[in-house]
Picture 1: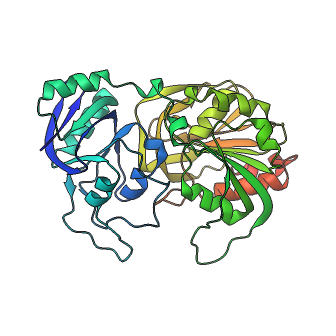
Picture 2: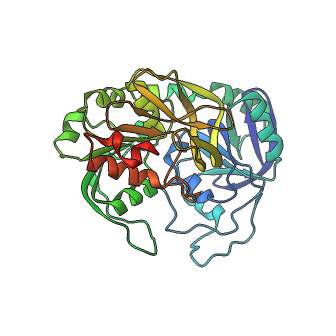
Length: 375
């Protein structure tokens, strides 16, 4: 037996799987049909309990290739039904065994559709999952006592602690053109597939801790800087906001997800918390420059608003019209709220990495290039 208790008093009873124990976190839902391993190992989910809306989870097991970081980061995992068997030629263990190995508390056999509808109406809520405490009232009080996402420095928890080089490529059937450039990627909670795509296009990729100063990055002589995804409230990453302001005007910068929010704050925009966030692989995003609509992968609870005049809106979310991308009107700087690396998919927006390379090739006149016009 296990219990999921929400801070508003709502309680769901289910069955324990994975590790036994008791965890607190912000409860969110993910709408992906596949990709549960990527969800578990995405550092952007640090501090959160994740509900999968797809009802049948675990059928292809866990492999060693599809992890997106060094370990799973979710606080807890909620599913309707855990597959009793798994079958895939790459599988190395079952989902319950994987959660147990890493101390992740899971709960299943509850109505995830009702839970998701509740979150859509009320917004994200703090929650407690327990396979130990049997008194729901005690668990509701624990959920109420949990710190909010905006009270936590989650980036500090997930970032690497020292710089390293990345050499793994995207496993494509044909080799990509590799530019003789060096990109420094800030690790705010970076996904491995972002690094795979960067390295597949570039000769050298260096990953640095989130708190690395602008001066230290410039000593590495990068041709461009990537601001990665990560967990939590972007206003908590004040040191990164200050670093962005110190980079030279002609240095190309590409922001993804949290990196997009940090860029926005650095240039005078504001950020706000979404009611229940965007988590899943089916978000429609319209490119306002080309008119193209991409289906994209998202994982964020905050969004950018009130762009200053020096930033040009380039992408919007077709569901709620939130800002999905912008670029600087003069500097070689652009960003998107969604994930162009999109592990496990879709792959509609992978060309953004090519556009970043094109920007590095001609940072002085990047706006006149074809890539800039169709960004």
